[in-house]
Each structure stands twice: as C-alpha cells, then as structure tokens.
Length: 408
Image (cartoon, rainbow, N blue to C red; front, side):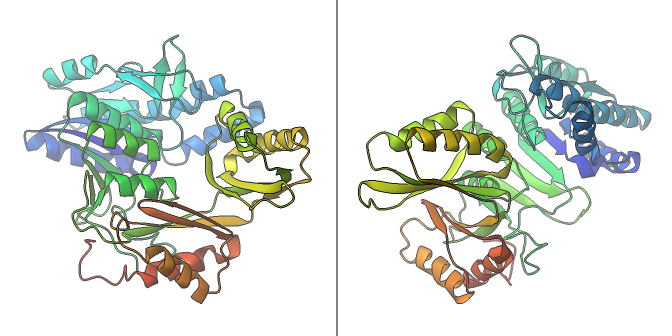
C-alpha cells in the first residue's frame, strides 16, 4: 500500500512533535507500506514570516512573498527528514520544485498545472521516505509559487493523485470533520464520512479542516481523503469519498466570519450591468460568493454581493469605479456580517429543508440579510453578532447532536 501523509503546522510545531510524526511514519513502514510525507511550516512560522514581510515592505510584493513564504515549509521538511534519519528511517527532503509540482504564475494563489513525481517514485523504489515541502511549486519560468492558505493539503492530494496512492491522510490538531465547529457548538460530533461535494461546500463555507481547492482536486482525481488527528490516537477520523451513503438532509453546518458585503445602490436596470460589474471583479482575481439583485423600481435596482474579507481592499475600489460609471447613487460596504451554511447531500428532492433553516433562525431571533443556495447547501448572511446563535440554532434544528454514533 502507498500512502501520502500530510502533517499540518501544529503537528510539526516543535522537534518533540516531529518525534510523534516520526513514530507514525515508522508504524507505516513497519507494516510494509510505503509513505510520502508532506509538511506545513512549523507552528506559527507562516504568520511570523508575514509579519517580517510587512516590516520590510508593507506592499508585500507577490513574487517576493512567495519566495519568502516557501521557506517555512522547507525548514519543516529538512528538520523532519533529519529526525527520521536519526531514528533509523531512510528519508530525504524535497522542495515543491524537486517533487515535480508545476503551477501557473499566479503568485500567492497559484494553481497546479501538472505533477511529475518521477523523483519521488525513484526515491520510493530505493527505500527512501520522501518528505515534501507543502504549499509550493514552480512556474514554467522557474519562479517559486505558493498555493494559498492551506495549500499543503493541495500538495498532498495532488501528489496522491499523481502517484496513484491508496489514500491521502491529512493530519491536524482536530479529530476529523465535525457536524459543526466544536469550539462554538460543544455538542458537535465527528463524522465517519462525507462526500466530496459535501466537503467542498463545508470548506468553502468556512470549515477550516481542509482547503477547498484541495478537496476539488481530490474529487476530480478520485483521491480518498482521511482527515485525522495527530494527537488523538484513538480517533477514527473522517473519510471523504465519492458518495455519502447515509444521505441526510443536513450533514453539517459551517460558519464563515471573514465576509464582506458590497452593495451598489440605484444602478440602471439594463442588460449587461451585472456582467460589467462581475467581469471587472473577475479580471482582478476576486471570487464573488452570494449575489442578490432587487426588483426594478423606476428603471433602477440595487446589486449586493459578498467577498472574502481579504479581497475587500481590491473589490471596494473596483465597485466604486463601476458605480461612478453607471451613475449609481451610493456604495454600501458592510464587514459586520457572517455567513452560516447548512450542507447535506440529501437536500435534493426533500422539500422543506430551506424552510426549516429559515424557521430555526427566526425562532432564534436572527434576521437574514442575504440567501444563497445550491443543490446541497443553504447559506444565509446574518449580522456578526448573531453568528454563533445562528450556527447553534441550525445545528439543533436538524438534530445533528447528540447522536448515537459519529456517522450521519
């Protein structure tokens, strides 16, 4: 069996933690299996590097940021390889370039174009355990690129797909995926399994266990993911596979707090207005989430949309320019909001799920500002002050806990 094991920053935060990781790798090797290891930067090292960059140049040039940020994972890789070697495991460190990860040139959020794991295969054939720096690759011009926050998940899953690994194990400080964030909902319980579609929605709606693009890559390449805890030895974790056999109407709820709402008031009710606005945003790489347009009144209407809070500094001036071009009357920006989402593969074909979500929020005294839906998701924008109350209300309304088992 061939495994790819990814260890997050908390798992490799200290040399003592790396010893624990080495024990896990030794167990895999002792069972006669092969393993490729992917690591994140140690503990808070990424944040430390960002702070240094701000001091050096507040503009944080994207290309130089990639070169700087990639060093965090390289440090972890070399140190873990040294620990493994000292404890009798033949290991070798690899950068993203050496592991064959080719990306586009979109610095700080590059996309993987291809993976050539020839050097990793050769190392495995020689009995070597490769330890790969996550979060990074190289573009066609040879420049170092990074894959965005949580990009080590994507590294691990991409390598698992290219190597045809039997499974990709993602280790962190949480015992899998829960029905809600257990720090907010104490009654939340771990899930035995989820579908790729459910995990994509949960990740994109605020669940921080896995990177959204990593799960999308796994879905495309049929990579089985096992989300596990480095520290809770007995926790079974969560398997993420093609289909959730239980098929509940709501499997889990997620909360996103880094959300901003932008509204253009009094813009013309005419063909092409929305296309003009959102094309401009797309040109600058800004992902738009929820969109709502009011009914026309006197040939005018309002358009509101949400973006990630990190994109607001880019999105607001673009929206303001478009507002002026369209001769709109006002621009409204609101960062005092949150997004709560109910996700479940069983929503499709079950009338009344949305009504239950809205009723739960109403009973909790929560006003809904915007609504977005897909086949397996219902998202609501609420005031930030109502965020936790909203999550608790929906979790309780669908009986997600207490459960007789962790499976839903």
